[in-house]
Length: 313
Picture 1 (cartoon, rainbow, N blue to C red):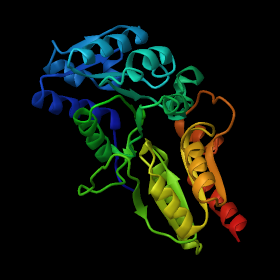
Picture 2 (cartoon, helix red, strand yellow):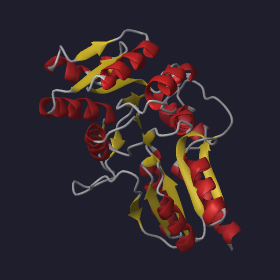
Picture 3 (cartoon, helix red, strand yellow):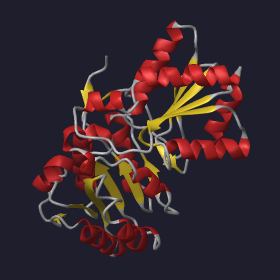
C-alpha cells in the first residue's frame, strides 16, 4: 500500500512556497494554526498571518476586507466551522461580492474520529455547493493538494477547499497535473463507474481492484472539482459503463451523489447507487471503526457496485 501523507502539512508547506513568490498572499487562522498547519507560514512570515482567535465569523469578514484591498487571503479552520458556523458571512461578505478569498478547511468528515459529533463536518459540501460562484474542490492526496492550493492562489474568485485530518495514500504519480473542473480517470473499466472524492478515492481504487478479481471491471473517477463539476466526464461514464456508484465522506444529500444524480437525470439517466453517510450524525470513535459503522469502506463500495450492475442488467 502507498504511504500516507498529510494533506494538512502539504497545505501549510505549499503556503510557505507561495508566500515567498507573492507578497500579496496573507493567511488567517482561528486559533488552530498547529492543526491546520498554517504555523509553517507564521514562522516565516509573522507579519502576514492573522490569528483571529475563536471568532470564525470575524475571520471571514477580515479575509473579505483583505481581498477587497488587493491581497490574496487564505483563511483556514476546521470544516465544521467554515462554512458551518459562519455561513452567512461566507455568503454575504465573500461569495456575493465574488471576492478573491480562499477558504481552506481541515478536519472534514467523520475521520476526525474521537473529537466526536460536534467536530465532524458532514454537511459542509452541501452548504458550499449551494452558494453560486463558489468553487469547491476536494483533493484526494497530498500531490493533488499542493497543486490545488497553487491553482487557487493563481485563480481569481472565491474557493472552498476541503482537506481531512488523517494522512492519505498517494493515488497520483508525480506526473499528475490537476485541472480545475476536470475529473481524472484513475482506472478504466466497462461494467460500472465509481465516482469518488477526497478520502474515498483510495477506497474506491481498493474496491475496484477487489471487484476486478471477481470479474467486475470498474472505471474509477476522481471528481476532485465538485463545483463546477465535470458533467462531460459523468455523461461519458454513464454512456460507456451504464451504471454509476458515488462515494463520499459526507451526507448522502447535497454533496457528490446529489450533484452526479442531477447531471444524469438531465442528460443520461442510468442506475445509480450512493456510498455516503445516511441521514444521521456519527459518534466518537477511531476513524476506521466509524468508516465501517457508517458504510464508507471498500466492501461497501463493492456491494453498491454489485447492486448497480444487477439493476443495469
